[in-house]
Image (tube, rainbow, N blue to C red; front, side):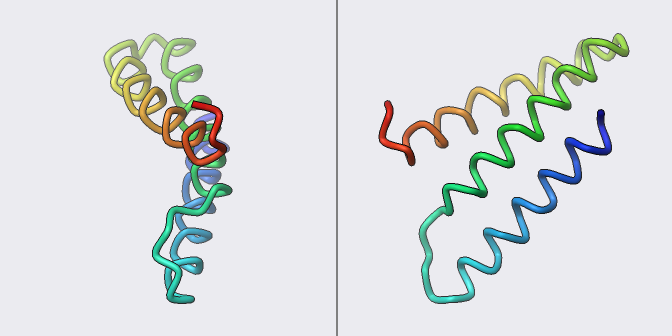
Length: 76
């Protein structure tokens, strides 16, 4: 699960990089969504493997990225 989560985060960053090189300096919605899902997988994996400290820190990142995603979708 960790590899899938980190892969999604890496793909999200590539999407954001491509988006910003086109002179569009806004955060891409797909970036925020993939990043949030990737971090969610890291949180789940951390708790399942007993790495609660790492999982808890990733949970903080998950809350922040989910808020940004929802803000970009104009839900919040």
